[in-house]
Image 1 (cartoon, rainbow, N blue to C red):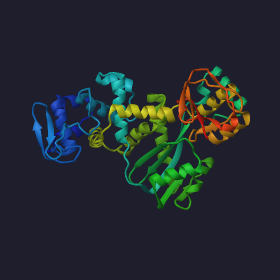
Image 2 (spheres, rainbow, N blue to C red):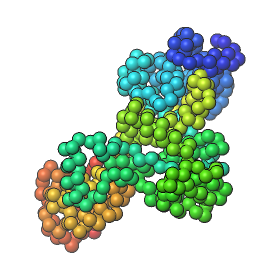
Image 3 (cartoon, rainbow, N blue to C red):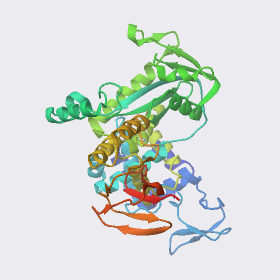
Image 4 (cartoon, rainbow, N blue to C red):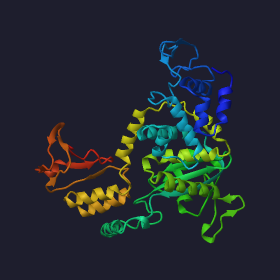
Length: 432
């Protein structure tokens, strides 16, 4: 193995995958590079952080003298439990760093000769490590929001006609501009001092939601916020010194007051979506914008220097099972789309499950979001269209599909509740 910082120095000069394969021709050379970047040539136990260990030649692993655990160089990193060769993982990371507007999983699978599923897992792990939780932002901060979603004029005539009829019947409002029926907002923060970006996908742009996000990421009482004249930032005063720029009169800079940098970032994000990804779902939006923010923050570095910097962030254990569990959680809680509650209420109204007055009240409360559980009562016979069970006085009675359940005594407080995930179906419960 080469000693000192020779491997890292060679990696910083890389520009493409053929150079990577030439400098690191086998798996052992890639492991040496990983050990030099992450552990400074001193393997460290991922459990107790001890550097005292034995080396097991037959298994090519280390054994900690302190906690007696066996570990490899990739243990405790994003490369743990990998199936593809480490060279392909490093090649994938180099390609991600070399594409300023991102690379799709299909294209990456062709470049490094893996399946699309493997390439997707690689990209998802890389986006997890690009999200760095550092100190709170301070100094001069530029803030703006982006609404992610397709344009209404690009939809087919038939689809637009159906949506207009649905909106007119349900009084759901328009879908242009800042409407969140088919879009979701992303709050962007740019710290001028450290050239740092933070993007937060949101389900609401209310003043309270914006204020809560600022308190999580921005230092109060000593920070100047540059925004446009949008009313969603009104609640920031007096914790933050807010200064605005009036875009409506074609003014984009007034001294140091400007939002041009975050606007340029949104322009690049739109090109990424249109040209590379075509669609970004809400549940993965944070990772996509974290990758773009990492590249823009270190835009002055070379491709090899970005590659080494990304490797230093890889000491984070992210398994495929964790990614799949995250996908299932987001699917249950926010993967249905912002307009799903209205569709759900519409279907229940057809079945006679929901009185009209209560439906309008729930529409006003949910506001296209499902942060609250919805509960309602019905004095008539109702029909259960989903699989579930009846629970009465602690006993669960299995219920068949399309079976009608008659309530003998409504005063016994039968209730029907739908969880916020909308996946478990109805749950009938008896409240004594």
